[in-house]
Length: 58
Image (cartoon, rainbow, N blue to C red):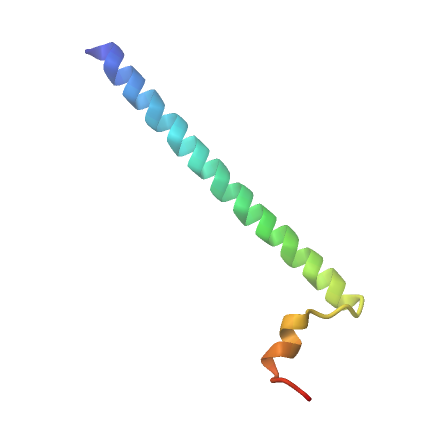
C-alpha cells in the first residue's frame, strides 16, 4: 500500500510543479511583452487597436 501512496503523491507533486511552472512562465512572458510594448510606444510606434477604439474615420 505504501508504494501506491508514494506513486500517487509523487504524481501530484509533478502535476503541481508543472502547473506552477506554466503559471510562472505565462506571468513572466506577459511582463516581457508589456515591457516590449512600452518600449515600442516610447519609440513612437502605436498599436492599431488604439485607433479602432476611437471609432472609424472615413
